[in-house]
Length: 139
Image (cartoon, rainbow, N blue to C red; front, side, top):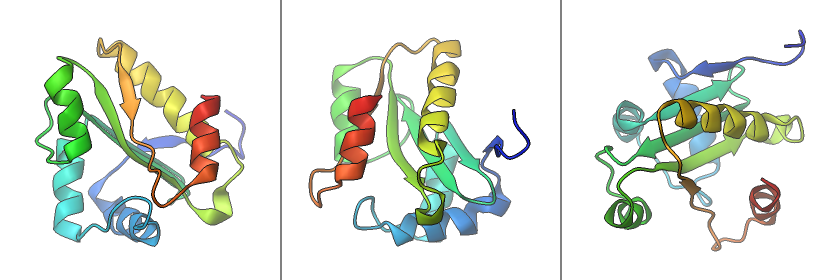
């Protein structure tokens, strides 16, 4: 890893305040979270990682999560095993550095090692997010 390429790290409780702030800056595209809800979701997550102090983060659940999202539940009703990417966020000042791609590549490796063959995500259509659409289409 080059010295200017920040490592991908597990999310620790110490990072939750920064994750909450970044998440809630993008509540229109994601959903607003209260601190207690974020802590619960992190506890349920199959994979949650960050880059830097908080240039980017990703949160994913597997089929065993106690998560009430209708979109997540749709997958659980149809697939015995899967990984669901619930949210991936890159801070505005950190965009264009490849953080989201690196997080996905690390997730794919982690999922493969855990025996998963399905990784899925929700990409919101309302409100439109053309940057996210283009990124996910290129994966």
